[in-house]
Image 1: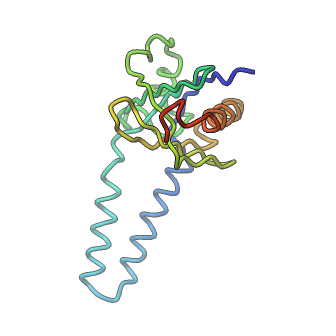
Image 2: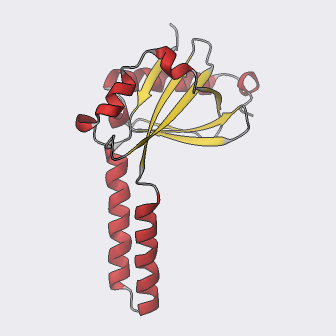
Image 3: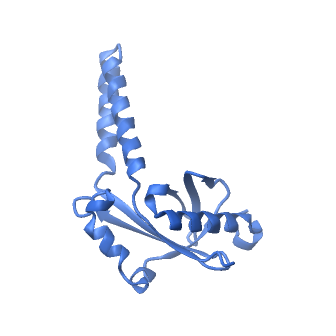
Length: 170
């Protein structure tokens, strides 16, 4: 059985909701803080964090070959054109329907590193590119379809089980 898989990873709505909940909890902590300076600092931190990365939505494509070689392409899209919800993201779906050749120019070779998390409800992949840069890729079940989730989980486990020397993950 081949482990080859190609998965389009959409932004997770669950992760977005958890992020929003975290901001609300920080604001609640700011409201309950006894010191005015602490209230101001917590409120400023929550506002800064909320504004920091909401302009971009990352769409990713992870390709794993039959021998375990991995390629990753990450596409930041403007959130105004591609909201994080699946039902209303025409730019995201248009990118998903693009032919594989359209993705090839932007993909880069990556290796799975130790420290990656493979749980039944979360794949947190620690990847290193040829340039040495380490990148984390969070994949939740709502980021991909059910069949793609199963195939991707099997392929990532197979790659992780291979000898570290073969992929340079040591």
